[in-house]
Length: 216
Ligand SMILES: C[S@@+](CC[C@H](N)C(=O)[O-])C[C@H]1O[C@@H](n2cnc3c(N)ncnc32)[C@H](O)[C@@H]1O
Image (cartoon, rainbow, N blue to C red; front, side):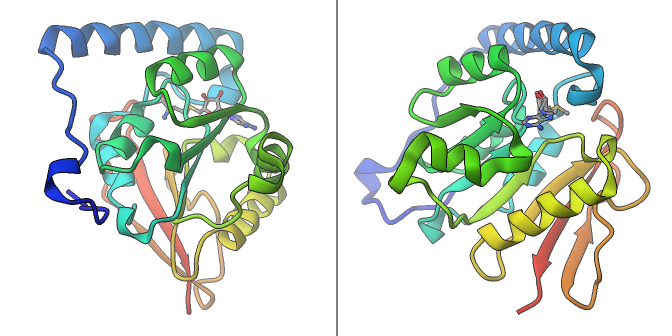
């Protein structure tokens, strides 16, 4: 657990929920997720919320000690968001942009104190600037994407990737999970260090986590 510099008495404590409450909450998320899949299958691009194993692996890339905010794109029902908060990241250091208004409302209720914006993640800086004006963050510890990137044209993927790499602090990552065999963003590996995880078969469909960093 990262310490974030707090004295031990002020360390954020994980909230203990009963197993029944957790199962009920996951079931509610699953139902909300399926409802949105039926309405917008291409935008959601998945058949179930992200599995906890995938979410944990994604969130493990966060350095809470950096003091910087984290940007999440396409948080959906919040499976990755939950793993992000399990790293000890303070709520007000998470900014997230989600297209679906019902998902946004659900997330804001589930994670009070975090900043959920309803908008287009492909224009994340414009959405942040419009919402937070001169207080809008523009430097992040990392950008974490749950967007179904393979459903978008390559040019759009590159645009998002370049904007994300410009928004992270030097050497910090852009993290994307993907169901594809090919990289979600095929970059020049002389310029970017790229790692990918093993397949996570508990994820539906099976997924891998891709981590991109600009070489410094
Ligand atoms: C694969 S789902 C994310 C799953 C999420 N991690 C979960 O467990 O619920 C992709 C999410 O990206 C959102 N999305 C798709 N296109 C978007 C866009 N242009 N801007 C913001 N969000 C978008 C969808 O509404 C959906 O919630």
